[in-house]
Length: 218
Image 1 (tube, rainbow, N blue to C red):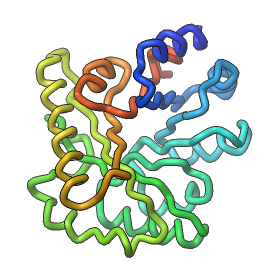
Image 2 (image 1 turned 90 degrees about the vertical axis):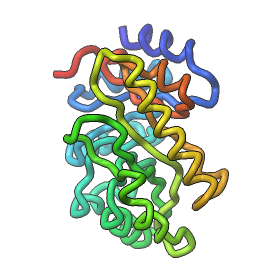
Image 3 (image 1 turned 90 degrees about the horizontal axis):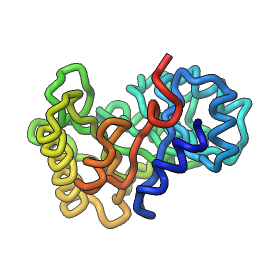
Image 4 (image 1 turned 120 degrees about the vertical axis):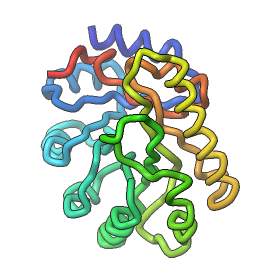
């Protein structure tokens, strides 16, 4: 059903919305099936699993690191990762920059913001971290390409709350684009299997969908 699931989701997406197939915990054969159906962007949340899959699957795949990333593990994915979604600290940003320079590339990243009620989720808080964020000097980050923002809504059945949280991330993106970056800072990564339609309505340009493609997580 993977091809059918992908076709169904893609048929409802605007051309400007990128679908990241969240393949964490899924076996290689399921990723191969999605690949044969035309999917080229995959998301993993564990560095070891990401490296193992990258080593054996086709080289035209775009690998996204979507989970919480420890600074000490950046070097393991720095040579090939296409996008790091969860940059939630200046310390991590500095380490990615260091590894990007070592690998003679600019690693694309998203700044993660905490927009949910759950304290377990990671991310900058715009009001608390604004002064720290303003110290980011784009021209000094030779090994990083700042592409946009990422956030996760509260896991709740209250769709009104989910929409409000997505709207907050959209507002954060607008503020950052206007005051710190430019039009190349154009990615808004928000929305998963249960809420991606609300996310797109709020302005998402990238959705991270796993169970609606591959089935429930193992």
